[in-house]
Image (tube, rainbow, N blue to C red; front, top):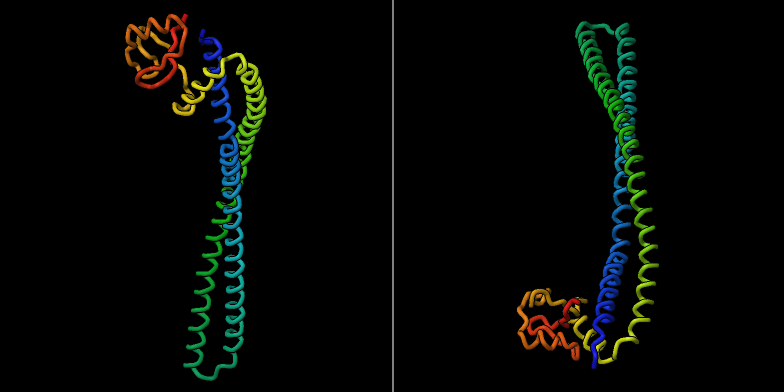
Length: 234
């Protein structure tokens, strides 16, 4: 029985391409998901900066409200000075007025500090927005390219599978049976060409008798080490 080496080699080639294409398609969803996560992460930086601004504005309002309350108390203290009868009470009230002013001064300094921080946060928001635009454009382009490659790979896999289905009937069932058994055992690589009297897959030397049998192409010869179908390149 003549061995259909050319068809078996073509079958191996198709299977390898189908495997590689299938592996690519399998990884596409996780790659797209990773791209979407990066875009979302970039967007979150903007949200975090905006939240900092919200907290900054809230703190400034609280400080300003506190300053207003203290100034109102200070005004009342000043009015009360006119009604004080003793020096002790007068001195005590002056102390209260002084302490109130010190609190106002400290709070107003803090308000200024928060205003300066707000300017920095505003710049931070602008920078984050600009960077997000750049990141989103780049990653969206990568995602579009990946989705296009996915479509092309799906079409390619369909063509390869059809070609394989047309090829299989041309190979004797006994030979495809051995091929498929080795295919499952050896991670999809069933054949190995002999180069310089060695199996190219496991690099084991082929015995002279086996080499003569290979040249006859009358039966399938398996490598004694890796169990793959051996063939000699014409």
